[in-house]
Image 1 (tube, one colour):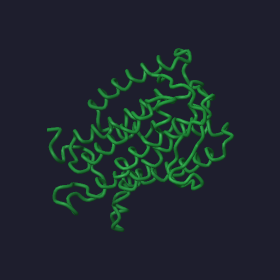
Image 2: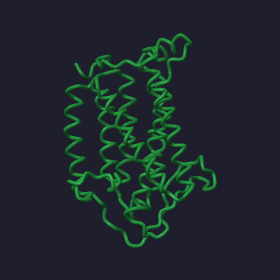
Image 3: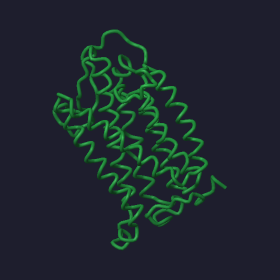
Image 4: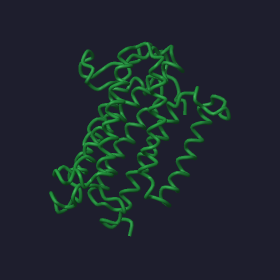
Length: 266
């Protein structure tokens, strides 16, 4: 049955039940800690953004928590239902982020630069993709990996026009971390025997850490691009917490000119 331990066809490189008799992949389970620790901090840091730009930003942070919990459940049980929860949570992060921040300049003409119509399309696409994921779960991980490519390409194009060098540098760091994350995922999936031979079958755990950093950083950057292009009067500024002049802190978007509270674009 789908909820039984070991029912998933996916099994990562880390040996099962070697560290704990109750957790199938101990390192892959516990390495999701950033998905639980950082989003509450981001919710606080983006309080003004949620009030004066779009409250939808907080949906993304909550979805990241759900991704972390789902991933922990999957790696702890290796159940098919855990795999589906993990992958579908990631899918909905993509769809929600596209609904909120997908640059209008890349919209197909049929949407006529209308974000609400595009958001409805994303919602319906997410429902369809959810059904397809349940039907063919074996291809989910590769499809989700592929979805990251256009996201990074659009980010690269947006960075080319950005004047703020702090934003540009954050984009470069984000890209580097994403590439490291992809390296970890591919090596753990494709070259498990080689890494096991040197007693280091833990690259998928590092994937969790690096992909969280890349994912939330991408969301921060797209949150900046959105305000800069569609609500420039808000005067967005990239800042870091806890110390603004330390660029390896937690990035967030500060709104210099809040004005009146506005409704979400969705």
